[in-house]
Image (tube, rainbow, N blue to C red; front, side, top):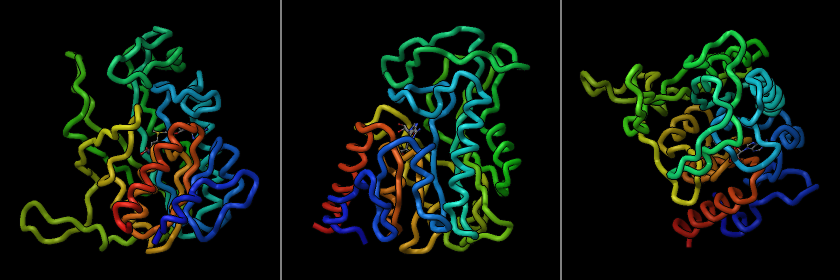
Length: 294
Ligand SMILES: C[S@@+](CC[C@H](N)C(=O)[O-])C[C@H]1O[C@@H](n2cnc3c(N)ncnc32)[C@H](O)[C@@H]1O
């Protein structure tokens, strides 16, 4: 279990090797920092990279601001290729991604007063072969690219959001879901299906968890961007790790994966490029410790 002392030392000192016994937040670009992590070590990687062209996280090296879709996909493939070497042989990757529509050749995104991080200084161009108004299919394009790169694509999970953002569209249904893909490093992998069984809607008996997960989004007061709802990631952590195992999140944001790892007695390493979000994550992890231990 994390102590207050551990929480105080949570940010890994620059230039020193990453702890193999303590949870840590690593400051920097995950494209580089993943390389410094211990190999064959993590039970699972659970993460939500920035979506393509949707939000500006205010840092030049951010993932998601690639002008061309292919460059976004190849950035992610390269990062997760490195991540794969850091997973144990029976390790898994849970990857959350949302989709977007082509810009219809508008090259800027209007400011969104309610959500300033949604403003981008540009909108990416319509990818070749697509038309204005086309759904891009980003999550599946990334999933196929990862599959081709050697990952076993084991499941697509629909995260259904009953409280999704309303959309002022009249020529298609409102988008109320995102994807979570479960990948494994090897053909056989650790997956404790019993720990996440769910009651059947017909007879209440416990059954294998289904691929549609109904979870409300949870706004997190300090963050201006989409954070993981805790209940979305609890089953991922439970199914793919044992107590004291390490979980990796290379796009740590406000640190939801860290908080849930603390709750479930797992350890974590999180990589985040934006100092502001690191402070949010630190505060969150310390307040959890304060709440539970002190
Ligand atoms: C969708 S948010 C993750 C939110 C997180 N799951 C949470 O619950 O708070 C994506 C995060 O990736 C970070 N990011 C973007 N590019 C990065 C990079 N190259 N290296 C590390 N972090 C990066 C952003 O700053 C942002 O915090």
